[in-house]
Image (cartoon, rainbow, N blue to C red; front, side, top):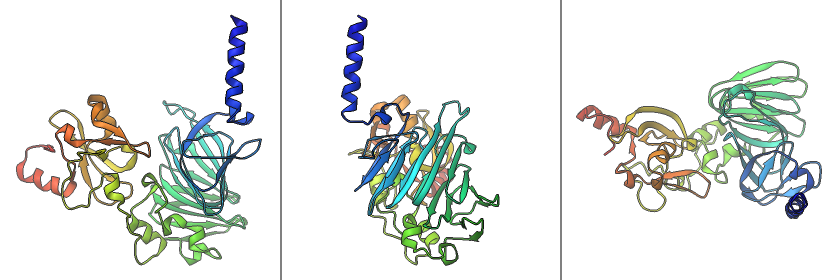
Length: 353
């Protein structure tokens, strides 16, 4: 029996080695690739491996996006990371427990442009290190650029970050678009957005690419285009490319029944500013929220709640996020302003019917 078990185990190892290098076999799986454009590689102690959507990524792995390439990743705590072309990061440490005890995510950004959206760990667990700075995160979204001289540009999108130079000087960024440039010599330049004083000798296309255009990003990594335009200084926001209709946020002309097809994007991971406002007649929690990429406010349910009582009304989209068929629930997703007018007029409670 022991000999048979050994042979089976050996066969399994040989099978895995056909598609993975030995260093990957021994590594800790911490997440996966959610979108890959052109050439993105992962390297540990051995040769670099070309990554595809769905491939796993590992602790101590270095991720690199080539020319005209882009990589997006999601880790086990729901932290999301986007790498623009000619960017390189190392996934240095990752410790995640459901209890939140002793959790840590440490990423070393070597060069290029990145977008980070933190996940479910306590805020003090996150840290991004660059050649010239250490960035502490307090539950937030932010863009980072590491330039050829080792300078770091940080721009806050949501929440708050603390950016410190290697000389121990720190800045706290808490207003949307607020930005700093940290030089290798410790000099810090502040601005209300990443303007010419922040960019210095770098072009906007290189230093703040995700504020110039979000069209290649998954919707789960986008901020409202009006906000991106405000941060970048562009006079006209980028067109939405029908992102609202594709994601569950309708054209704003009225209510939406969320029926047919795949329903509407009701995954809590796609939403921000979430507040519970009551319950439906059937007892489902009812929320006021915005999608991450839009400033419109909605009243609706969360797929994670629906899964517990009517899983047949929930499906998964191509990006791995839950969608809810509101028709199966006998409900409609409704704009917050319209819901508020109806609520004040009828005084009938929080009813989506």
